[in-house]
Amino acid sequence: MGRKAAEIIGFLMRNGVMANINQPVDFDTASMVCEEFGYEVESHRFEEEDLLMGEAGADYSEDPDAVLRAPVVTVMGHVDHGKTSLLDRIRKTNVAAGEAGGITQRIAGYQVPTSKGLITFLDTPGHAAFTAMRARGANVTDIVVLVVAADDGVMPQTREAIEHARAARVPLIVAVNKIDKPEANPDRVLQQLADMSILVEDWGGDVLSRRISAKTGDGVEDLLELIALQAEILELKANPSVPAVAKVVEGHVHKGR
Image (tube, rainbow, N blue to C red):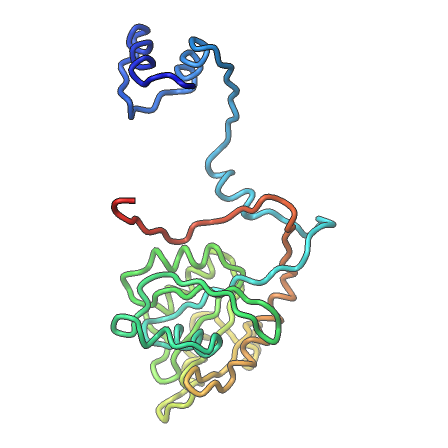
């Protein structure tokens, strides 16, 4: 408004409002200040929940201007079961080798061109300390790829990832990893998942699955085909001509900025 803070605070104090320069005031008080200095105020009210969830979950299925969009795929599973190694294989990079103790400690996002089109991947931490990050990853995704090591089986964070996917009502694709290892027992993994009511197609269920090796690349292309198939079934669309809406899954504070 081109007014000094002291002038506005003085007006508030004269009207019985004890406020400092950093203190928020309600709409009626702000309106009173604006009117005093010759400004008109309009109130545009909204519910925070509607703002955060409504537009971000917009349904474009009937929008004539909507086009198919890349699926958002969150890779989840227990620590050291090969989630980042799988993404390294898909991206042809080596991120896992540079992580502290080989453990992902943040949510990492990648958009990867594949033979089936673009896929947006979110890599979530598998360590027990990162429950909240996994939950956020599940809540912003279209498809969850659950990575389970064939030599280790279903573990605590595997179960937790399944619960996050169920809570978010997101379709699950099972990737049984490390089938190249001599001690691999993928059938044991599928039995453990069946005990949790995750029944893969090979066992008469409706959950898509593939046996893969992130190390050798065996089965990875088949897994990408399953992701593309699931995305096609979901008919994921968006309208590129409307204002973008985003969700923040992780933030960092840079001191001094």
